[in-house]
Length: 89
Image 1 (tube, rainbow, N blue to C red):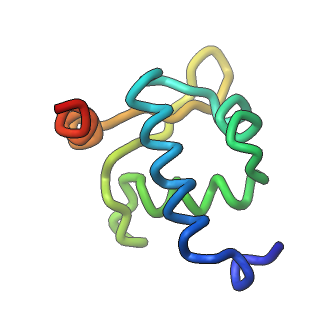
Image 2 (image 1 turned 135 degrees about the horizontal axis):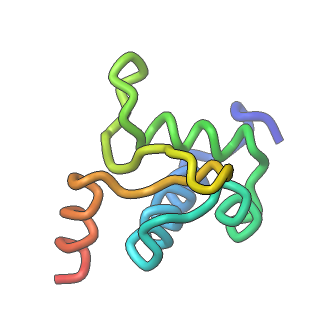
Image 3 (image 1 turned 90 degrees about the vertical axis):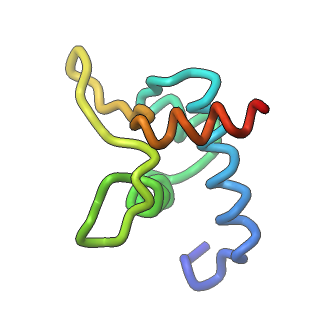
């Protein structure tokens, strides 16, 4: 399935699922979340561009990427933590 053939609602569902996963588990490896959400690496990378701290690509700033013990992980920024707190209310 190419990006052109992915319905917009599917992308929205992936965004919501990724944010919910991070609200429940603030640090997740890329491998784990990709497998959990059944996403290819390229699909996950597009979500990270959208939700991440990438000013040149217009990211929303909710998450950031890091490396922990040699594994690529994603974690919430303060803005992402604030969003999770507002979703819990």
